[in-house]
Length: 329
Image 1 (cartoon, rainbow, N blue to C red):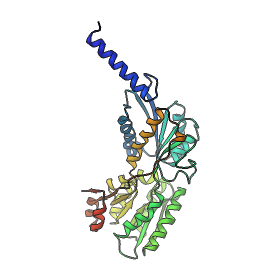
Image 2: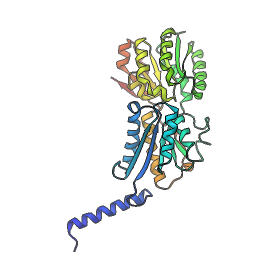
Image 3: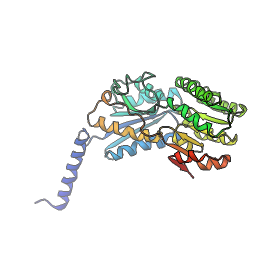
Image 4: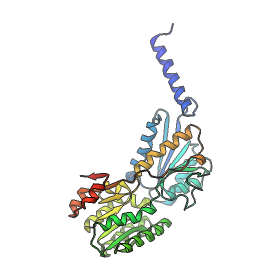
């Protein structure tokens, strides 16, 4: 007759086997996931924490049945490319990417490892996938679809600045999608009796020069264009510049308002990373990336930082406060 400790050991072993089988894995073989983030560890590590938290919800626990390999590109294309090649050589079950640059880099070194995007704005337009419904290839994940949101962000800014004001539009001139975003923002501003002024950084190295230009531009508000890792990496610096100039500002990612910007409106970047866990879990269970439709945002939270409003001595219109999903006190 088996002793109680022996019975407990057998039950635990059977549970491990059952869990592994449920996730399409061989017993004892952990799920191996790479995460390639475009920015620095200091500014981006909480996003890979969201991936790990999402996988924990699916039964994959780091150190037990999950191995996560993290790499940070620091906004440097050569480092991103080298990290992509390194991850591709590790026989990972999936690689989570943060933006179009990291996705392209991994696509360039592997056609077999599933690539899960965390929030590329328009992956069809820039040729990463065939369609949202049928991605094809080895890329799938979450789409931000943020380009169409710029007119709505201009409308938010319009409620905070005088009529016929000049507003600055902070963009990355090396990001091809930003030209599309600029055109939509500029047209929206014109329709609202505003004048949009390009404040263009030539890549990450040009952010300080762009913020210096913002100080000289005689604008009354700032729109921070979406879908660029530069604007996430330097969100504290951008928000601080807007505060010094007493400018109401509107960004796309929730972290912009959380870290000092006045307003954010758009997809939740952190949520996008957490949602990649759904895809990784399905792939671990035998699904193919080519057959997993790309998700679009289901919620576009409006976040208002009331501390920043007070520092800027700005009164947020009541109708805007009532619309807000989150008010940061």
